[in-house]
Image (cartoon, rainbow, N blue to C red; front, side, top):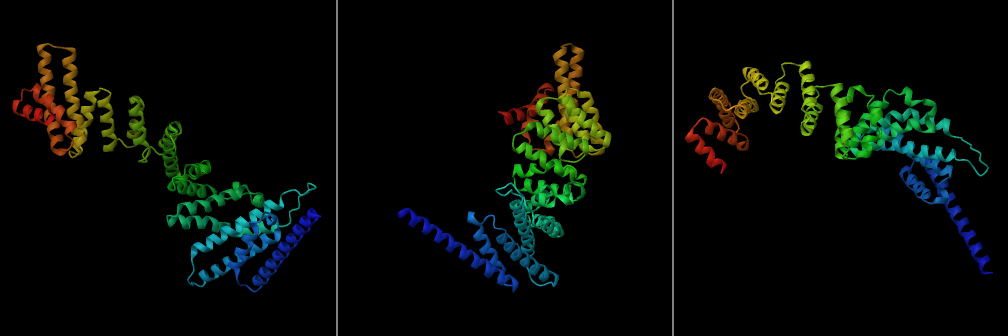
Length: 397
């Protein structure tokens, strides 16, 4: 008897809930026919869908969609008439329409208990949404321009993912929509600006097809790989960027830093020589080559490049440093291999040659004491310049 009572009570509750649901749907339909209370209807339908019992009720989805569509149309009309309206709200409404009808389509695509699939709305809804799909892209651009990158990403992600939804299969967006790679670039940008590695990388392969933004796509990808500690992908992306545009200011400095940090100076020199093939008079490339030659122990070649640089521009402090260090290193190297009197004259000559360049560097960069003081100490010592040597000795001790 008690069990029967429980069953009857449960049946009564289900009936009451069903009645309440029908009443809410009826009221919603009445409101929408009159073109009013769209926001309230949307909220009511969303509340109904939170109940698992209702999640496959097509009528709720259709009512929810209609409430959102009317909001979109009202907002669009206000913008058309140049009345005050939040543009962002229009794009959000467009995005909601896609979300609701995509979910409805996925429900329709599920087999029933007998394994049958009955798709009633796909063709009609895909045609409708296809007219508004561009506003999903535009919504992303709008939010990105407002620096709301997380929100913008959602639009671009939806725009790209729609190409893989059965709802839109007949439109073949993957092959026919030329805007897809551009949307992917924007998605990479928004993911990067949000510091979300997963979002940055999700559409990265598609973004690489956007040649107009390729430099920046590769930059964002390289920085993301570095952020997550993937050194191999970081370096390979730098190489890809350098191959595409060797003079783009992001790639070559980091390649040089990477190779120099590994002690792979030959690879670093290949980078510099490629840059000089592109522009053999660029001071920054010539300076980079002088620094590499210095580190490779090719002091005479370094001196030649530094002289040519100073002849064109005598205001580059680090060129004076490279010049002075090259002469000092020549002196040290010569002294290491020979102690003869004749060599001593040459050694002294190298120190004398280094002196004006190091003193000029000191004058130009007084705060860089760690760079010039030890070198000048050595020069003054070898040239018997007692007063100057004492000054350096005090600075260093």
